Length: 411
Image (cartoon, rainbow, N blue to C red):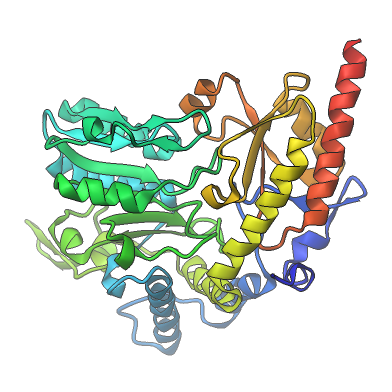
């Protein structure tokens, strides 16, 4: 069990009050809060050794470069990548996925090919592939989903075929919390010769993710959802694939030699990192990884299973509130998406905000999925290592009061 009270002391914003109530942050699926160590790393960079990386020979550039590349090595170790050359800095998960779509897919997806996705993809892992399919005259194939929010793999052989060139799938749904059986899906994709991209935006911050064990070709995730700053993301890709890919952005550090007529590309990973990178935030992401490693990803996952189990039990006692996604905490992350016909989700979010509780409302960038649930929007509470069961009790009590208020008003 995590010592949540001790952990909370590391997060300055969690001492904040909202409308006179203690802040209860249940929007970590959108962005996590930052520990003091991460914030201090940003201050230390700008106050102590702010300089551009690589090629500089002066002391500050040398120090900045060393810490920048140390952070890359921390990321590689965190996901068990074979080499640091497989770690490409991006701005976020969305940019990482788009990089794959506009480089690897531009060359490797051809007319008649098929791309397999799940019905629960974030728009960032759906819209780029719609564009690729349209431009290349390829097709999107979708796995089926059971009513409980898990994938139905009964007819998996009808989805994958010799035409399948890519499986691109969320590891954990940001909308309903489902953890997909990616190991089984990767094995199936491998059997037909397809490549695999995992959207790890929700999984990497919350559970151990081992790219060596999973044997995925690409993994995309964001720093800001795992205690790091905004504006820094990661694309992991197997080195041999990166070697064959053309860069998306041109200029700056990604070149090796340039004449007036032509240019050649730098070695990995700089080949894909044009211009001045987000140095400070990359270094601070390294600090966030140190923090997560100190606590232990297995411990964080166990804490979220306990939190989710507790939340599901409490929500089951609420009348007229429907929870979406699997009811087993082992099959889902710390995300509870719910809906009540008595209160619009946006109204519910506003009422909870007045109680100091921050949740997310809307379609969570999964509009097709939410509409398939038969609702226009849901309310979503998401947990992380700094949340407690006491906060769940406060959330449930506030929900009961809100529903009661709107029901009484309707009468």
